[in-house]
Image 1 (cartoon, helix red, strand yellow):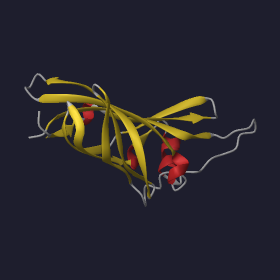
Image 2 (cartoon, one colour):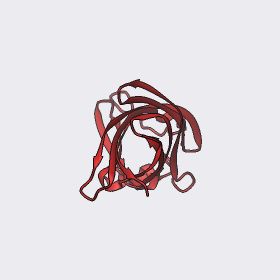
Image 3 (tube, rainbow, N blue to C red):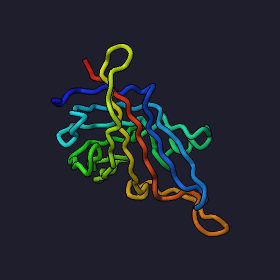
Image 4 (cartoon, rainbow, N blue to C red):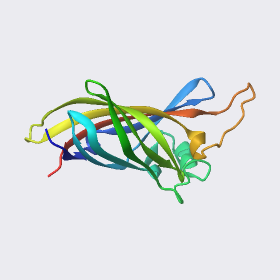
Length: 177
């Protein structure tokens, strides 16, 4: 197959994250608004062009006060840095259908190289005759690398919010026309 453009189906996709809370619990959240520019042969991602943009104001942790705090200058500062962006710079095949996708991740005005494991989950034709593919991307970043350092010390030792953020994208995309 040759390289084609793919349109992310937001109703069948998700952008999720998790972080340690109080050193032992895990809090999960999602971003509900994002867009991608994907041009790829899904059976060989090594030549793909991948760009991803996340609207940070769309953060949803199922707690309005926490979401508003995440939007504030203590964390994302969405008024001044409204998007997280990722642009792939190198894609290496690790195994059948599994790739290391390295790219420039920009968050909070800081750009760093990050690598995500991307798995091609399959492809088929939906009931309306449209070709559809599925991908999963997973990785970890340190929020402190991006200047996201707000925290609170706990009486029992440790901190309220962990530094390592786990990121998981579950993407369904259809062939763009």
